Image (cartoon, rainbow, N blue to C red; front, side, top):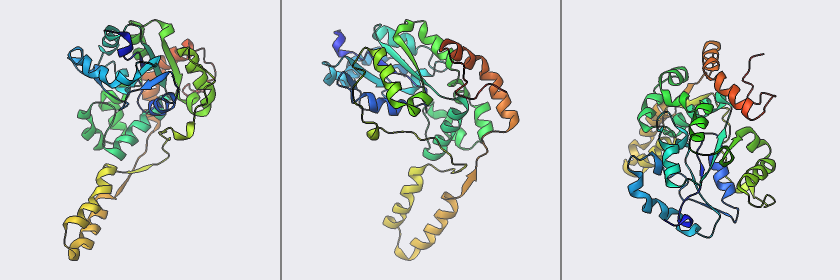
Length: 294
């Protein structure tokens, strides 16, 4: 199979760490061709090799680009899909990997908020209903994908089994958001493409940090569509009554207390070895995730 038919750059997560933003930004570069849609989930399939031709069709218009890119955060879920790095290597051993990492506490908050707000998560769909019916503390402790995805060093180490260090780039979410230009120049250097390209950051989608402490337990698409369905399908004389019932049921907000001291200490103790190894590997001394106890 010709290499110019193959994807050769993978942004593998972590979820809620800026993969959408980076996908949109890098897609502006003339040397980069991004898959549409962003997430193809090809390597989560057990029989992905049988579908390689179908998968490669997503990159057929990128034959003249240096990189053909897929951005699927689920590919960092090595606890659930521990064969993914091996599968990517088998597909194209010359691939490069980008992994974006975020403060573990903020990432866990963001995943939970996304699940409550949209009714879906980047993790296994099996857990969505349980997460939505759980308090934050129960979700973090009782549903493994929530916490497992934040074991960054474990996942990075799994990719290092199949790809050389010079072909894997670790990016901090905080750097990517706080200094776009510097972070993108660094990434372009890693990819050996023009570092002076003038990216338009205003067009990129950003997952803004949520400051909300109350959420609806219903997905936003359900909340948005239900009034329209009521108005289209119900007689006018009962629409007002139906809308009032809708408001009482669907728009009831629930408070979310993300952290208490016990939970924070528990998660801190679980993840501290992972964070320390990331800090040490990246030569980070200033604790940008404010993770170390004072």
